[in-house]
Image (tube, rainbow, N blue to C red; front, top):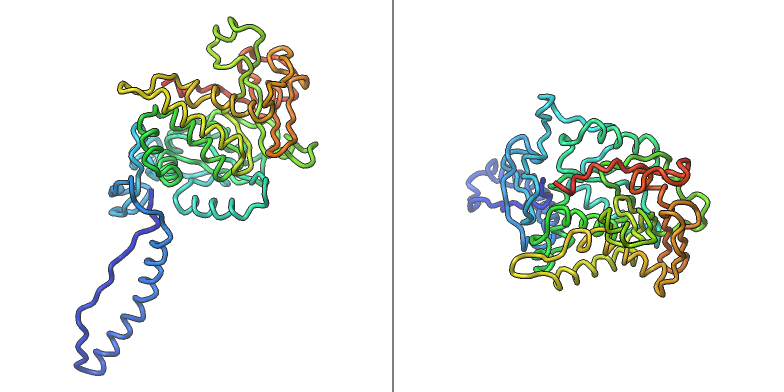
Amino acid sequence: MAHGGRSAALGTAPFRPRTASLRCCGLRLLQLLAPAACALLGLAALLPPLTGYELRAVPAGGAAAAGELSLLPLLAGFSEPGAREGADPAEGGPQTLPAGVVLVNDSVMEVLTREAAWLPPDEIPKWIHTTWESWTGLSADERRAAGRWVELNPGWRYYFWDDGAVQYFLGHQMSSSEERDMLNEMKKIEVMDVFRYVLMERLGGLYCDIDVEPVLPIEQWTDVASPRPQLVTGWESRFTNSSEKDLVGFARMSQVQQWLIMSAPHHPVLKDVLVRISSLFKTHLTEFGIKLGTLELTGPGPWTDAVLAHVAPQGELSPPAGHGEGSANEVHYDGPGSVWVLPKECFAWSGFPPDVGNESAVLAKHHFKMSWHT
């Protein structure tokens, strides 16, 4: 990824004014160079320290020009900078992004961070975030789903985060030694879970996995609410007996999905889930690695616990109706940090058990690429 904070050391030989013409040339050169030097030095002063990074030259044809340096957090399992190349190997030509799709880089992150800081309190920004190793690595169906998000939501911006962008973002947002150690111990899917929570907590908007496709425009999801909730999620499934839950490998009896999260920045649920993950990591880290499965460490286990601790702190949740489908399962928490947990069919129509409830209530479909198993 291109690093926007390159600095240059500009120096000149001792000035010896032998003639008027030489003096004029030297002064003119300084006049031309001084603004560029000041701009570079000023930009460098705005960047965080480089602790925890390594400098690597990006290969020619990569995300930056040949010889330009990229800041990459030291995370295992992510694609090398060359994976961000602008040439599509399958097509042999330049990568073309559909209209409305923004490939995130460090400059885009800076703009998003500034805009998030200017938002009115508790407002969800109209940003759609999704991620995969690279845009060129997407299937035709996944690119079509991206186009559908753009088509249905003309007032929203669609941001695609590739591996390089994810590493850069986490490297800046989780820069303490403890946080870096935790990320380096985690599997890639666990790092990606952390990424979605950090992204939503810092910037907000709507996060969705790459295999999620919208059915209705986002503006229609909560258009009956005034004021709108500050966080929206939905049931993945609800069970009335543990044997069924264990049979399908769920983490919780009433489980909240986390392949689609819509939130205002700095929501307390997102802060809570990150605290829970950090605590679980410290508790279950051994000399042989993390002795806790992904579902319980970063996945729907801690996410469900954080959501339900906020909306039902005393356990005052109504019992399941069916497997979470229908309005009887809808949860509206209107206290500080308002949350809606929508019925199962809204986001998990194809999940276990599939096709239950009212199909006309489906807001977005998850196609279950199951890439986290690989």
